Length: 254
Ligand SMILES: [Zn+2]
Image: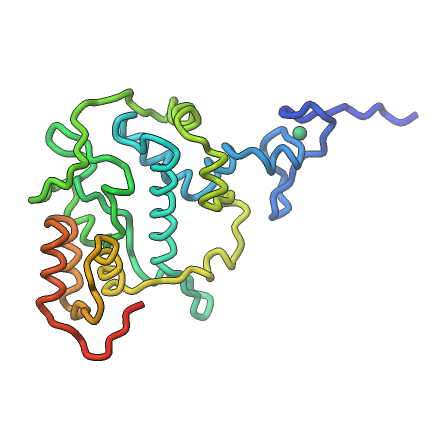
């Protein structure tokens, strides 16, 4: 006589289940059936590169210095995705490399004297990693207005996920930001990145602040200084830094 089969049920819907698999064919670690696993938006959020990045960064913060609602979080996640895309990705004869070393930089630094620089899209920009590391937590000449002085609830590795689930509609974040689990990424997710070179990125940032950048371009040897101005000075001075080199005839950015 055949052995009776153990009845395994899905933790979410309670139906009998066959364990969910990832696109890669590996079995999912959660005790969910395939439809429930595919629809588990919180798990998709925390399993995505952007969600993982945000959760880790939020741990150095408090509830006052992270996005206040779902819309603000969506703006932040979209900026993170732009930064990833801007870095590009190349593969030459089997050698993988990032094309550009960018990272999200704070305007008002993360840790200041008596304040925390908010982890929100308005306080961040895509900058050069080297310049960001040099700036560290140096307090810039300009107060960009994102200095949080009253501490909220501290976010720790123990409560981070619960706070994030409570504050934001993760289902909307996942769908609007098109987040997928890291484990489900394919080769094309990397190779399809549209990289952007540093001087064009500098222009794009200033354009985002309403400056007319058409025809201007930083000479390559001035790009690093240009990014320093973004850390330290009001945007209008960063624009002056760009325009002092004059317009380049026939230059078509982006
Ligand atoms: Zn289920």
